[in-house]
Amino acid sequence: MKILYFSATGNSLYIAQRLGGELLSIPQMYKNGIYEITDDVAGIICPVYGFTVPNMVKDYLEKAVIRADYVFSIMTFGNVSLAALTHMKKLLEKRGVHLNYGNEIQMVDNYLPFFEISAQLGMNKDEHIENKINEIAQDLKEQKHFLKGHTGFQKFISGGASAVWGNKKAMNRRDKNFLVNDLCNACGTCRNVCPAGNIAGTGKPDYRHNCEFCLACIHLCPQNAIHLKNEKSEKRFRNPRIKLLEIINANKVI
Ligand SMILES: Cc1cc2nc3c(=O)[nH]c(=O)nc-3n(C[C@H](O)[C@H](O)[C@H](O)COP(=O)(O)O)c2cc1C
Ligand code: SF4
Ligand code: SF4
Image (cartoon, rainbow, N blue to C red):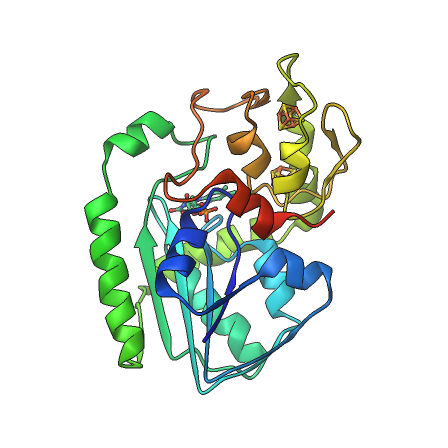
């Protein structure tokens, strides 16, 4: 089994690790121009961004050649996923790949403009997450055919959000709103966790406006030196079961 994954703060990486198989980082596959995936079973695990699939995952899948007898996708989300999995299904269909199984797992919402991390942690989703992983692992073992359904209204809203998200030029420039304060000690962590290779320089981060708005640099800065103008609070998040080094190993592209 091969699993393609994308993860900024470790939630999706944790799910990928728990489900097992050979883990393939989408940012690194993309960077290295490796698009062919062949195995009996292939999976895609990533977060929901703006009720749809993250742009980098979309860009990668639009070029990917996936040859597998059974294909699944698990999307992690924080509060409302709407029809993100339907978008995943359509993306794969465009590449001639049938999605046999699609499911989602509600985890901590890392979207700082809307959510406060302490409140998210207070919701204590751990038991739900573990139960859901066990359920999904069993489904995959049985090669169950299932796609979490969505209403027409959910698809409509997801479609609108997807159009906004699809404005890549605007999205890429959202790093213009990042403020780096004097706590920065030039450690380089932000550069190493950026899946887009969007941070240049050797001192304070020098953003190159090719941002995926994944927030990894902000959440994972050891000095908490990077801020969003409109963040709900200063509290940051990394999945507690995933080490910083594991995210660096997954996302480093420079
Ligand atoms: C840019 C961005 C957009 C997001 N949009 C949504 C969303 O539409 N719905 C939702 O429930 N969670 C949303 N989230 C939260 C993430 O999907 C969620 O926290 C996910 O588990 C993070 O996975 P990761 O730790 O693997 O990066 C968003 C997060 C980011 C950074
Ligand atoms: S991770 Fe934080 S402290 Fe390290 S270089 Fe980036 S902004 Fe500075
Ligand atoms: S600059 Fe920060 S928010 Fe933008 S893609 Fe890189 S890590 Fe993610």
